[in-house]
Amino acid sequence: MLEATVPILTTWQNFYVIIGTAAATLTGLTFVAVTLIAQRQSRMPDEANAAFATPTVVHLGAALLIAAIFAAPWQILWNVSLLLGLIGVSGATYIIIITRRLRRQASDPDKYTPVMEDWIWHTVLPFVAYAALFIGAIILPGNASPPLFFIGAATVLLLFIGIHNSWDTVTFIAGNHLPDISESEGKSKSEEQKDTSEVS
Image 1 (cartoon, rainbow, N blue to C red):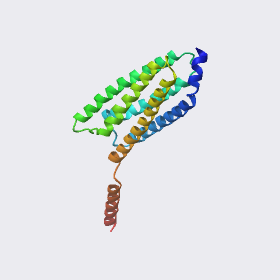
Image 2: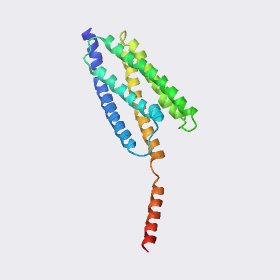
Image 3: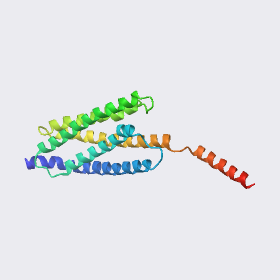
Image 4: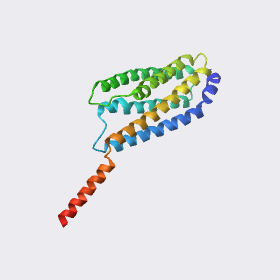
């Protein structure tokens, strides 16, 4: 069994080295962005953070975990199949939870209302990725070659979901919570005029 499985997984190791490196880097950058945003007075509400920001880290973490699994020296495919299947089931279950959070966001007029793009990138595509991962994990022990492409595609999809959602979250917060430049300049000019009038 060792001779039959190790070469198959070895051929994918370079692929998952790239995926793992990208996922780890993006996860670190996401933490940096969230930390910088948290230092400002206007921050994302906890409900929105749980619905939009946290899932991004989860998806990137899942891609990193899959890459770590393929980097391990497995002797049989059943162990790999079991772990990947657990990730797929856990991820799909988590997406159901995220869907409920988004529905609560949509039902509250005081909160941000998710648009179609949000539903696609935060619920539909992640669920497809985790479902493909689960299906690939089930088929993996019987015929390893085709399922590995399913798993690889699901991992890449999770990575791109993380990229899109992290960028979307950061740009949304930057556009809605950072002070407007024109307003800041207006305040500065009014303060200067006030100081000038007081001096005169």
